[in-house]
Image (tube, rainbow, N blue to C red; front, side, top):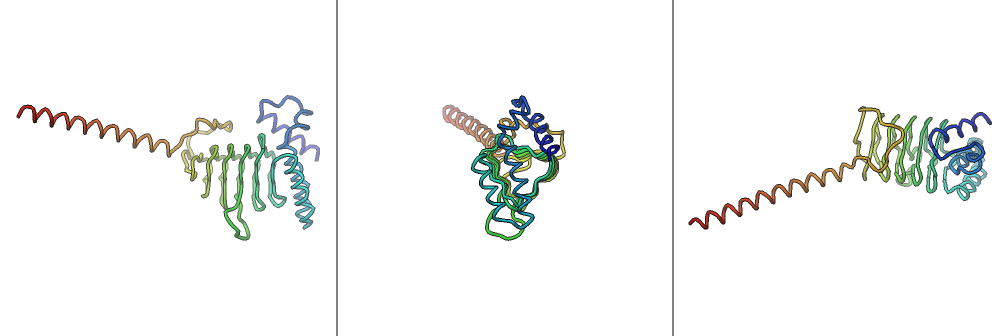
Length: 220
């Protein structure tokens, strides 16, 4: 148990340059506290002590601002950065070395039964405020941009941004785990900019035609 806790704290040092000492991380990192509480709650959940498991998860939510359903399956070296507003649903499955930021929701889309929450595979990163909804899969080494809403499967080694989420990189050059949220490509904005450029070109052509017509009338 203590070896696993140290592993969790080592991940914090790898991911967060603000982390200074083990005692600081142990006492002040809410994401870490939420993960540890979840492990306890999940153990009771597997023993079908659902009320006790849910009580522990709600107490953890009260103190950390992070809601992890005790039924969720979470792998090793999971890192929640800041964490306020994070929601992880009951049938979520999260692999190893996954990182998520504050405001992320791994949720369902309705009242369906069975597997209704996302599966997030190893080494995935989900940025601030992203919503990943339904029984979909986020592939290995994939990244979800800040504020995106993802409703479809994301292949391995992909970057997804926008509402709804669109794949903007796949199997290309390796993307750093330190995702720059503020410079992610935006396919909608790119399309709008392209349309604006086309409109400006058409306006210039119309202006030239009008000037040519006026010059022809003047010569007559």
